[in-house]
Length: 163
Image 1: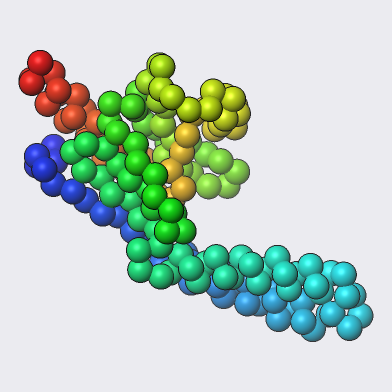
Image 2 (image 1 turned 120 degrees about the vertical axis):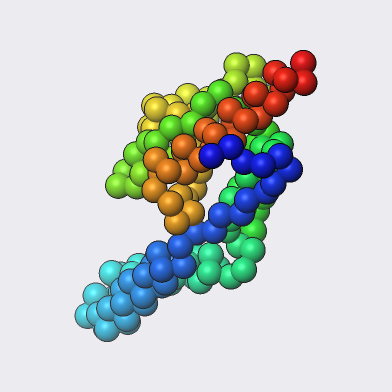
């Protein structure tokens, strides 16, 4: 399953997950509105918190708001329209991890990588990895980690062949 040289692959999150989040948030906003007269603090708290959750879910449904782009140079994470790029040469390993109830793809950076050592230590204590992808983009964490491992190995083999 070696990717062809020069090919880019764009993975998008499952819209069903974000639609479910919108629906659940709407239910709790409705509950907050219903109890606002008898329990104003709980009602307002529910309204604000779940209103924000629903708004973020709607944003993630917009085209271009969230995706993972894998190419021959590295990968780009797009989350709420913000982009961050990681090159294959910066990654030491990928693996499946659990953060709370969610299974995600974690990764470690190579030694000497620029960035916050403190944040990487905190992340390693929480998940066993220095960083993690925000979503599994419609795949299982295991399958996505394997797909990214294949790309990482292909990049390393290509770099070794060029050297």
